[in-house]
Structure formats: C-alpha cells, structure tokens
Length: 347
Image (cartoon, rainbow, N blue to C red; front, side, top):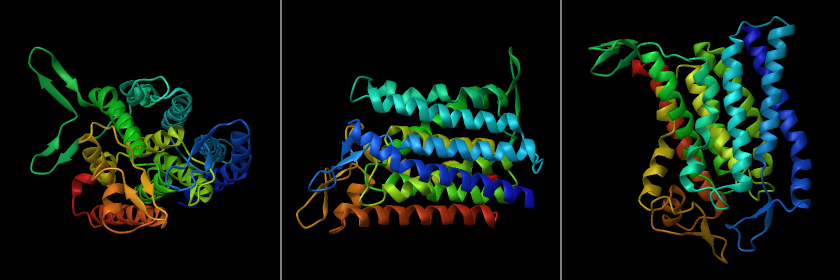
C-alpha cells in the first residue's frame, strides 16, 4: 500500500509540475504564432491562446513515465505494464488526433461524422491487449456468462465482443461526450477534475493500480491547466484536450473494470447529448454576454449551460459553478452507491 501511494504521489507531482511549468511558454508561443481563439462569452471578445491540450498531453506523459520509472528501477510496485502502456497509448493517440482536429477540424475541412469517429482509431491499443471483462451481474437478470453457446456457430466469447466492439464504442462515446459540454472558462476542465478524482478514489480503494495511475496523472495535469483556464481564461484546451479527457474516463473505467460506474458518473453528458440532439447537434454551449455582465442563452434548451442561464441572471463564472456543483452531486451519489454497495453490479 505504501509503494502504491508513493508511486501515485510521484506520478501526480511529475504530471502537475511539467504541465504547470510549460503552460506559460505555450501561451506565449501560441499567441505569437497566431494560434488563438475568441472568447465568445466576453463582451469585449478577447483573443485567447488555443491548443492548450498539448500541455496536458506533456504533463500526463511525465506522470505515466514517472510511474513506469518507479516500477522499473525502484521495484516499488507490481503492475501490468502491458495494460498501463495500452491505456497510455490510447489517451495519447486521442490527444494527438485532437491536435489534428484542432488544425483541420470539422469546421475547417473534416465533416462532422468524420470528426466524431476520430477516437475510434485510438482505441486500438486497448483492443489489441484484449482487455476483458469478468462475468457481469445485471439487476433482475443475474450473472451474464463470459461465453455463449450459439447454435451452428459454437462457443462465442463475450471477451472478444467486449474488446472489439464495446472498447472502441466506449472510448469514442466518452471522447465525444466531453467535447459537447464545453466552451465556458473552466467548464470542461472542471468537470474532468471532478470525475477523474472520483474514479481515482474508487480505483485506489479497489486496488486497480493501472487505472489509478492513469487517473492520477490526468488529474494532476488538469489541475495545472485549470489554473490558466479558469475565468478569465488565458488559454483554451481545444479538441486536443476535450477528446483526451473523455478518452481518459473510458480508459480508467476499462482498465479498472468500472464501466458501469463510468457510465453513471457521466450523467450530465448524457443529458447534454439529449439536449443537443434536439437541434441535430447544430448548437454550441456558449452564451450571449450582456453589458451587465450576464450571459443569455443562444437557444431555449440547446445545452445545460443554456438551461442554467435561463434560470436567472448569472455571469459566466456562476454558470460554470452551478454545473460543476451538479457534477459534484452526481459523483457523490455514484460513490455512495459504490461504497455502501447499494448496487452490487457497479463493480
């Protein structure tokens, strides 16, 4: 247990320090090269550095490498290096594809359906190691066996279906979900911090070493980024960050066999999916700034942000705070269900 804690601490500080140290340089260079966006939620429409996901990418890498160093040279921890590297590769590939998406994304060349399918390719490392799932306990049904006997075909392994179908679906779905509920200072990163922290705690309590390492490295990098992304933001994460956050959720859940928890804890994203589907996803989460400093919604209910804006006169920081508070409540409920074993099928 002590070795586990020391490895997590080493990974956390390595990830945080690298991301925090490099962010000022990235902000300066992105602005100098004209890689910036417009903060649409501000009346004065300031220009803000873009592609901040690259800093999280580097910080996350440092955290994972620190944990591998601890495993390889300090002999302080027993872990499945193959699974850890597969999860690491998936998150890194999504981040890299997100950078490409930032440069030539669907508003600049890629069609929206092509943009949505980008994370599928990044799931290949997890598919390749055949990350399997134990027999599932479904409510009212009971144990779902790992293998099925199908007439004329013989025995079909659910593990193969899990690896080849559910893993890429999970990575793609989570990546695109976190890309939907975004656009306000600190929103997507704040949600990422809360969810990742919850998954880290459960991973640690369950002794799932690989998923805990992925979670702690991502959490530290996000905390460093949040310092520069909080209101008023000095840098935006871009798709390189939002896609990577979602991929980390899926990877942590898959490596830790916490898929059901992963689904429940992303409740707000499912609500966002329904709201945006009503407008065929042709709606953003931004607001219209007023001279009084408040945000007005673009549509009646095209996003959770718009629903909050319609409930009162809120500024951007307050809108984000309300949504983050909602995620805290969801995370507490999910953790309580797990901790008190109210639903045995969660783990």
